[in-house]
Length: 83
Image (cartoon, rainbow, N blue to C red):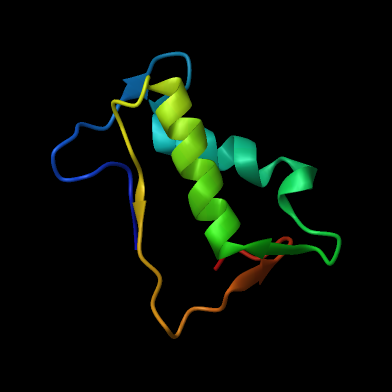
């Protein structure tokens, strides 16, 4: 599960993004070739850390994404995988 902010925060949107800050951070992260390891896999824990860092930086720590991972979810997503 991925939420754009904690329950005590608001989720920010910017007219320059055309959507919310979390979506902007996701899009920039997924298009960053460095996000994928040398094996072409994306670590869910790295995704969590990067999204938190990017969103907090863009919102001056006013918004913090929250991610929980089911035990059934794989730890890595191959490059180009949508789920």
